[in-house]
Length: 304
Image 1 (spheres, rainbow, N blue to C red):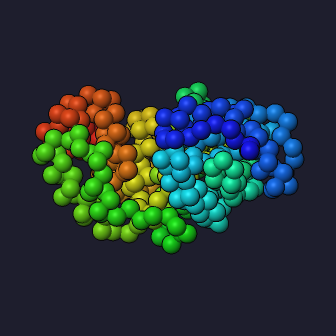
Image 2 (cartoon, helix red, strand yellow; image 1 turned 120 degrees about the vertical axis):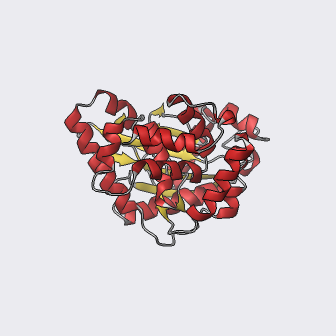
């Protein structure tokens, strides 16, 4: 037995998933099976939902097993399909070296990719000079255009109206605002759906010392309207900067404010994003909004 801990629900997983020693024997066995060099040193990386750590020149990702309450196979297949599609589209991503599962005490799915030394893009943008920031926004614009293809991709789920309308995270809205959201969603989800990363936050892009950047962590990739990509970019990565947002949106004639508004309504975590947007733009709390038009107007003032 390589893994000796007990997982009976999310509480157990939450207690364990940052503990590299508990998962190192599994990782060592994976490296043997995949004919990778023996692991000499490990280091913690920014935690997410799954086990993620550096093993020498590689990044090990071990997915939460089904016993945690997560759909391990679906999450693994989503990210695997998304990374392979990103590679096919020549998106800058760390090279995938191995993928599969180990049946031990539990079934653990895994991905092994190259470790890319660099700085999380959100931190990098805070100290980069203006010229470097502009180059980064241009690179991001080009990469997202290349990414947003309307082709079937493995088992990636399509963002459907039923799922979006039934998203319980939005129960925080007032009845009037929720009625507005539901009316708008039907129209928004009727258009073209493309491959989106879905979580291009400050932490999910890396900038190397050479200045090159890469996308990481495709766990939230879906097929959705392209506006779905915007909220994490605008509000996390670019930190509400109208200047950087304008550089990213350069060359487009449609309204960034309108696209951002639609993106919030579409996003799986849009309700949580909206809570932060209301705080940052000094609007009533999300539970007190009289109308979503208040948000739309504030975005138009920000992104003129």
